[in-house]
Image 1 (tube, rainbow, N blue to C red):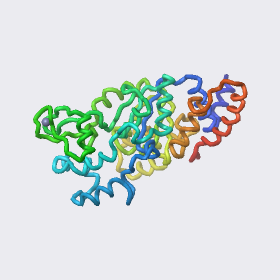
Image 2: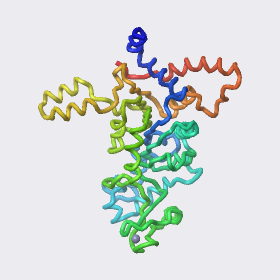
Image 3: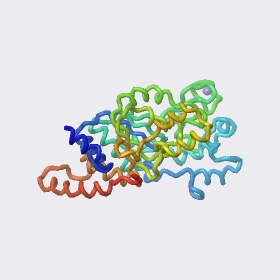
Image 4: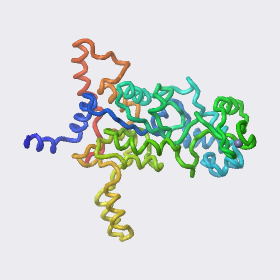
Amino acid sequence: MASNDVETKSLSKQKRMDNLVDQIKQGKYTQIVVMVGAGISTSCGIPDFRSANTGLYSQIAIKYPELTDPTDIFSLKFFQKDPKPFFRLVKELYPEPGRFKPSKTHEFLKQLQDKNILQRVYTQNIDGLEFEAGLRDDLVIQAHGGFRTCRCIKCGATGDSDLVKKQVMDEVIPYCTNGCKKGVIKPDITFFGENLPQRFFNKYKTDLTVCDLLIVIGTSLKVYPFANMINDVGKIPRILINRDRVGARKSGAYLAELAQSGQYDPYILYSMSKQGMDFDNIDSDDFFLDGECDAVIERLSTRLGLDNNKPQKEEKDTEEEEEVSVEEISKALSLSEIK
Ligand SMILES: [Zn+2]
């Protein structure tokens, strides 16, 4: 046993990841929580918000010069004054069956559901593609709201989502029909300064307590409280799949610098030292798989035997082939920025 322990200590990070993949495959993890952001939908044709000339914000800015800051579109104050730019924007984003196609990453989430190992998906996206991919309503938390419900900004009465959608498509501003009959109806998308949906708060404590594996995909982890979820799980493996390395633990040198500056309370520094994912520590179960979400997910999904498109191992030949590809995939999945 002792020698095994020593061996385990010296396992490379890659080997550790390989072990984790094997364990997922063997069914060790059954309450997986996945956090997803815009990065999982960019391959679906969802218009990007921020690109300089082609992004939705810049398009809207041309059409509505009165918007000094395009992000005002998601400000309640501006919406109350002029809801037109918001509705113009959502017309381009409305989730309609067939309009946008779920990505490989959305399909992966569905595969976890089918395997019965998905505790919950927390999404920052309002595109509803999780549902389009076939995820069950109860397994998805739209942390920043969505289009499925809507209400009057004056009296709070719920609106008819189908009617609102039709009106938005026809470029008609939807007004309250069930209450005061005066206020504008706003889809339940979380605006800046608004609270996250109650369902987020109802579920996340329990989910993060029971969660045995956390997978974070395609998010910059910059928007709180969503981003803080990574710190609220127990001592469990955490995987980040993203183009950029985000949510990483601050290095000891950086914290020492802060401590020297004398501007930080030792307690704050201590809690900072525990926050974030510890990718650099070869003994930690925090992993960064860098790359485009779909590409990384496709390899992972194949390796986990979740990929529906590939023939499932029926013949012995297939198994042999699989062994070869595991090698390849293992290389392709190699972790970056390990020091
Ligand atoms: Zn009303």
